[in-house]
Amino acid sequence: MEKKILQYTLRQYIYGELSEENSRAFLSYIKSGEDRILIQELIQEVLDDPVDRVLLQDPELLLVLDNTWEQLHLQINKPKARSLWSWKRIAAVAAAVIGISFAGWWFFDGVSGSVNQQSKQELISPGKQSATLTLANGDQIRLQETMNGQIADEMGIKISKSNDGQLIYEVGKNAGAGSGNHILSTTKGETYRIKLPDGTQVWLNAASALKYPMQFAHKGKREVELVGEAYFEVAKDPKHPFIVNTSGQQIKVLGTHFNVNSYADEPALRTTLLEGSVEVSSSNRKLKLLPGQQSSLNANGTLKLQQVDTAPIIAWTNHEFMFDEDDIESVMRKIARWYNVDVIYQGKKTTEKFGGGISRFDNVKQVLNLLENTGAVHFRIEGKNLYVLP
Image 1 (cartoon, rainbow, N blue to C red):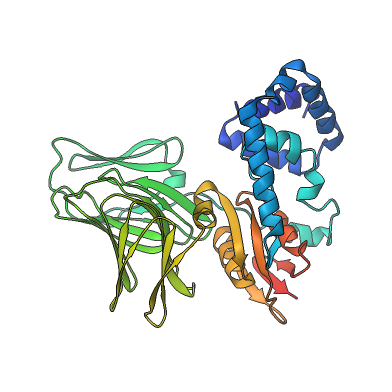
Image 2: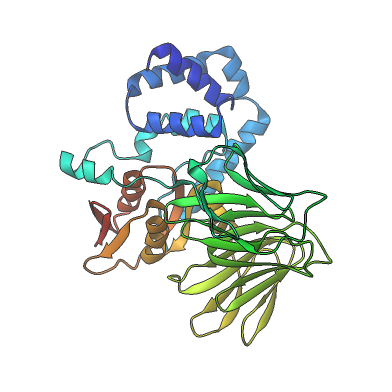
């Protein structure tokens, strides 16, 4: 890249004028280590500019930076957890000025392994915004391969794909009493958003599926089925409760924000409430959750309630991994789903707990390097197999 292009892009990034996609691409380029000396020179030039010095004296920005430092130190000093915290892009200037200046703190400068090993690692790429929509008649639409705009119209119900990767249902005034269900499903390494016919917003995580009716208007309740993980922001409708059915559990709400993790390979089915209230029912117990609480249903059918930090639980909706005293198996399950790899353990598993976060769009090598930096674990990659070693 020429100096002028880099300079222009850096300024756009600092002032928040780059799109999310372009910002991510720019940060990836910086992390690659190419033109590192030139980038450092450009940062210094930017900071020497009187306009930018004024920008860095902005009290609101300084407050953000202070909070960033505070959260960072809390994560590093948290007991019982090995910290692998990398910079969250809380503010553009925080990332550009601090994150880029200390790029070497983010990832290894050295290159380990042979060229052949590097080529094997390149087979593993981060997940993407993609999903498959299965219509009531069985037709399937691969959303990543479909142009933006309207993709279907069934009985006055328009289905469209937005520019930012969201599936949107719009029920027209003359819509008929459409019957049948649609299914939005993701494989490993995929995620997608959907706006249901009632206005409810759903974020669907990797290896998950959401089954829902074409419209709710002619039903006494709004009922969906979930396999995997999803975050819901339910549109308020006191006359029509919203119900989420998962394996062995039912969640009933009127209008609220909550996350459901119902992966079959997790030790428990967890429902976490962020706003409003929900009622969680199992075969032998019923619980009412308040904001900040989480219910967990284990394999024995025991339903428990606990207070939790919700930030790590919904970090995936912001395209981040965030660990909070997670064991190695919990960490690797998340990595396996997002990077679509098979995890194989060799030797004794570490009992260390891990805390911290990193972008889900980072290369898998950077994520693994941060885990290795704790000194508690080591990895080897062979094709799509990821070996976890003492």
